[in-house]
Length: 244
Image 1 (cartoon, rainbow, N blue to C red):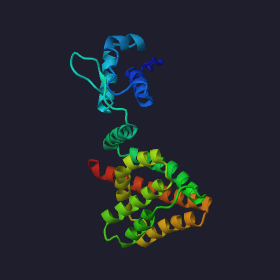
Image 2 (image 1 turned 135 degrees about the horizontal axis):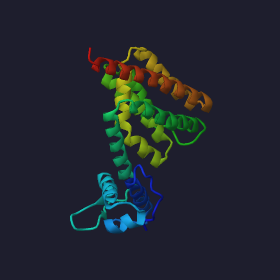
Image 3 (image 1 turned 180 degrees about the vertical axis):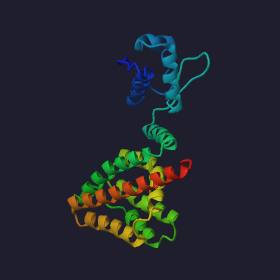
Image 4 (image 1 turned 90 degrees about the horizontal axis):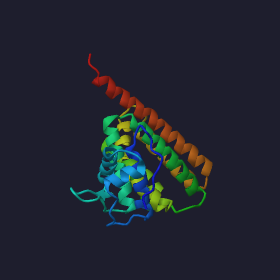
């Protein structure tokens, strides 16, 4: 059942979004359920019907509800994986508006991947054959696009090796963005392809030999370096875009 939340006066419509979204994902609101009328929601959340409509529009954009003229909004999806995919689409729109958000994506990668390699090295999960296959592709890459794709596959295969389906789903939905970031960073003059391959091989070897702390340290260094290269690429692009 939709419950009222204390509204943020700066973004009143988000109280509706947060509450309804939570009820849909928890199963309290099933597919096919009708939401209360806009007037009822406005009274329940102590906001205007205009703010209610703004909130419903966001829920519709995320694919969770459908609105038709003259009818109450209907819940049309409660699938978590598809919902996460909608979030990834929203995140991509942020990056289109401001490339600096890509640096924040690197921070998300750092949080995910340091935990993943440490736990893999400690014996959780099982290293997928896809990790070694990605390493082989890295070594044989003949251009930036091929190298970036193999690089991204290596990191994705590590995450999937842990066996956490929700984590794999979240990471998988960001996969295209991560590939874009790697493509940008690999173009910044910084290291040779052989050096890049060696970094990945060192991470792989540390995991296989059960060195959890070393695995985390190597992954942190790798992502930190990539973040520096990414910032350089963004700065260069901004410099080129400035009027002379």
